[in-house]
Length: 160
Image 1 (spheres, rainbow, N blue to C red):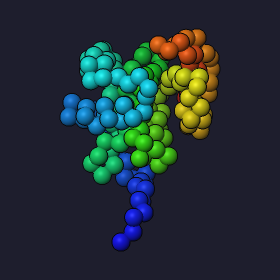
Image 2 (cartoon, rainbow, N blue to C red; image 1 turned 90 degrees about the vertical axis):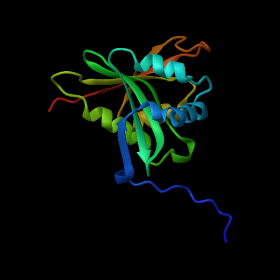
Image 3 (tube, rainbow, N blue to C red; image 1 turned 30 degrees about the vertical axis):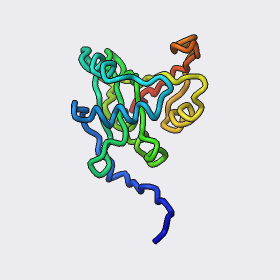
Image 4 (cartoon, helix red, strand yellow; image 1 turned 180 degrees about the horizontal axis):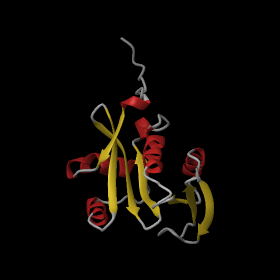
């Protein structure tokens, strides 16, 4: 018997993205706490998800919640406020699948942009969002409670 741990293998077909429900909160909070220095608590999630035009979605693999995203429906954009993937499932296409799901919701008739902000020190996230076709379009000074700046990222739907 081997003591070697095997990394979970994830195929694109194995990723299921659906609406977040209250029963997902325990897994979402665990992902949140393992992903951010100042994680949201359950009340933070519930307060935001009760706001008008706020949507929560989770990514599942094998019935397990392995990622989530929170975004707002604005007049001409989808604004992501939070997106994270469980550390054991990073670099397996989960985050890309979630961003792709949002891109598919864009249309020339309504919401044409996908926006989010990334802390200036979070190089991994900046590289990830660039790989997803998003561009840094500005800087928000002292955007976070630790006074760090944030880069504004944007994906603009191309005209056909």
